[in-house]
Length: 62
Image (cartoon, rainbow, N blue to C red; front, side, top):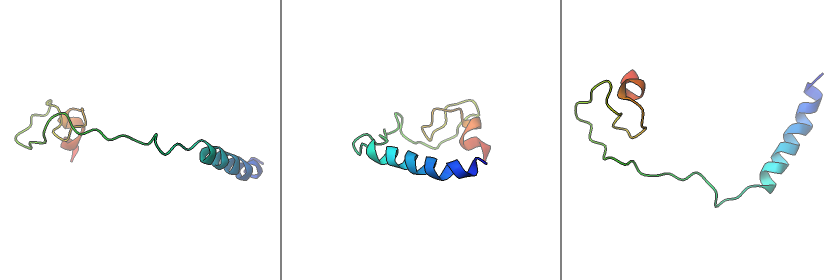
């Protein structure tokens, strides 16, 4: 039943996206605030990758 409305909805959504696209408003990448020094890191220390998460929740999962 709802499959018939998905196609027109996708086309309408794409038209809206194309009309409202602003190339100057992309994702801005900011450099990390601290240098990446990969020395010994404790589990509860901030992750050295610059994500802002604790090491045990970020790179320490691997």
